Image (tube, rainbow, N blue to C red; front, side, top):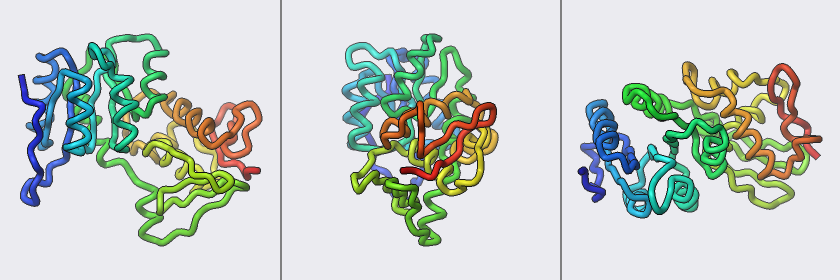
Length: 245
């Protein structure tokens, strides 16, 4: 089994770091092997608590995280990791129940894959995730001023959201979804358009990921889904930024 110890990254080795967490050791080693051959710096763990320690000390860019870990399961690992990093998290699950997928995303996962899956598909997901467009990065480069929608203020360049002066804690993906809508408030985005804007053109995943992240953003900014004022639902089309209150 591969070690969970971490290696310091040097200037001569600027490979993206990926932490793979799964208690199925053959799958763990298979996935790690594919990622390493594709140019990633990989660490592995079959234990949730050890994975949290590695994530804290090694600072991976992406965590591939199994939901069904013994002891400290993937949900708790994800929840804990989110207290100190906004790295991307891809949740793996052997359960087809939609509730499991939504619970995983509710604690900060960015995407999920259902087992069995192709290791090549996972590598493609990881690679595409690192290429995701960043509306906030462009705004920062241009020095874009904060966007204001009533009591909601969105500093896209500074990656900060405030509601009535109080900071709102969003995950990286939640922020990018909000930034995409706020950046073009006259546009009604379909799910696919939001996926293209946030996850990147050609991203292959469940379009309902968008609904999950929209729901999380609404909850965190205090936007009643029954009568939303910040993120409007346009029936049969998608979502649009509202004027706020």
